[in-house]
Length: 194
Image (cartoon, rainbow, N blue to C red; front, side, top):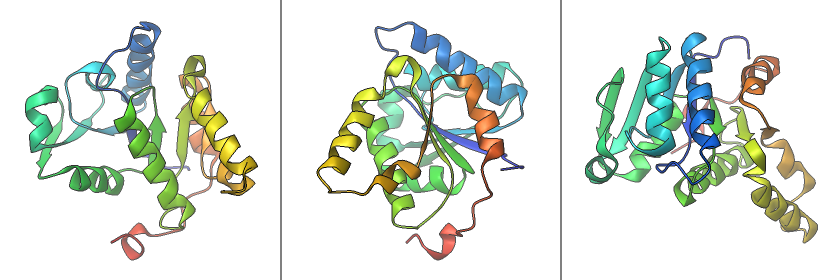
């Protein structure tokens, strides 16, 4: 992709007991900010998501947070970001995050992150979009998911081509070079998604 302007990042609303993930979020934020790639994310000021958004802002970048009203009270919206949109529900949040993003990056997170990841991969499998999806397998955090997908393929509930739906990198510095090497998306999601 020669012209990536926005990147949706899915990540945890907690910081984890692995403090290396805090630094990971800061590094990803720095990369996005310095390269003027607008962050699209869940809008919270807590956990890895809050650290990521703050890092983007501190490094001169722009951030668009999208949060449902019921989570606004729990996750505490990040009010120092460029733009904050409060929506009615989770479905609107996920769809708006999708619509505003050129590509997707998955950092460590919990079941919400897993839900968003599986959904965007499923939409790609169904040919509803062909935007790039990158799983950042930092310190092998996502290895159990990759093993589960391998098991699903081995039992023939899915084909080997499942692994063509997304890319895996191990370090944050690999993300932008990979994105720049990928072809431009050809599917217009406006014609495929409800």
